[in-house]
Image (tube, rainbow, N blue to C red; front, side, top):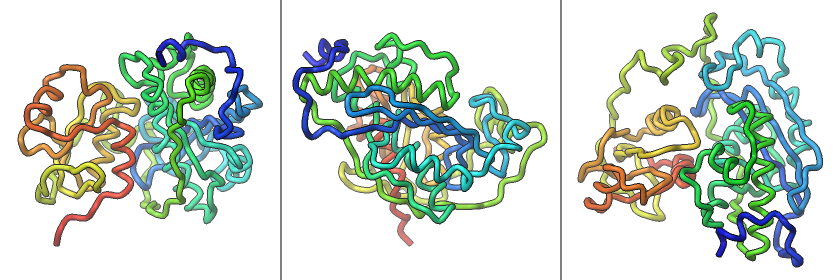
Length: 327
C-alpha cells in the first residue's frame, strides 16, 4: 500500500527516469493574498534529484507598504525598513530557482506571489513547473488529519520550530518532501507536476503604512474584524461545473482546516468577485474543503444538495481565472 511506502525513507533501487533532476523548495511570507500584496520574506532550499539538500537561502524583502498580518509572520515595518527591495534580490532568487521544479505547500499561492513580483520588476521567473506537496500527499494517500504543513511535518517526524517564518517553513517542507519523493519513486507514482506560466494580473495600488504595524482594519486575532465584508455586487450564476471557470457572483463556502489562513482565503475570493457564504444551501455554488469525508454539517449538506466540492489547492487554481459576471 502507498501508506506503507510513504513511511519508508530508503532510496528505491530503480529511480523513475521521468522524475525531475532538481527541486527548489520555496516558502514566501506576504502582506496578504490580493493582487497588490507583496512578498516580505522568501526562502529556498535547493534539492538534488533524490531530494537531498544542496544549499539554502533566505532574505527579507521591503514591500514598500504596510506589512500586513504581523501577528502571523512577525515582520513589522521597522524590521523590513532596511531590507532589500524585490528588484535587489530578483537575480539571486532566480538563480536559486533556475532549472528546477518549484516545490511548495499550496504551491499555486507561492507561485502567484513570486510571478507577480517578477512581473512588477519587468522580469520573468525561471520556473516552468511546480509541485504542490498537498497534491503529492493525496497521491501517496498519506493518513493526515488535515493538509496543514504542521500535519505533514508531524507525519514524517519533522520538528517545526518557527511556524510562518519562511526559512523554517522551507526547511520543514524540504525535510518532509524527501521521504514523500522517495515514497513516490518506490511506488512509481506520477508526480503531480503543473505548468508555471508568467502572470500579468498584478496591481500596484498604493497601501498606506501603519505606524502601529497593523494593516488597516486588521488586528491580531482576526482578519479585518473592524469591518463587515461587503455584499457581493453580482448575481449568483448558479453552481460551479467541473472543468469550467468560476464566475463572479458564485456563492462559495469553506469547511475545515486550510493551509492558508481562512480569512485570507475569504478575502481573496471576495476580491475576485465571489460571494463568501457562511453556510450551505441549495444556492451554494461550491464548497471548499480539504477533507470532504469529515462529516461536518457543511460537507453533509453539500452532499445532500449535490453541491460541488473542491480542495484548497484546486480552489487556488480556479481563483487565477474567474470569469466576469454577465453585463
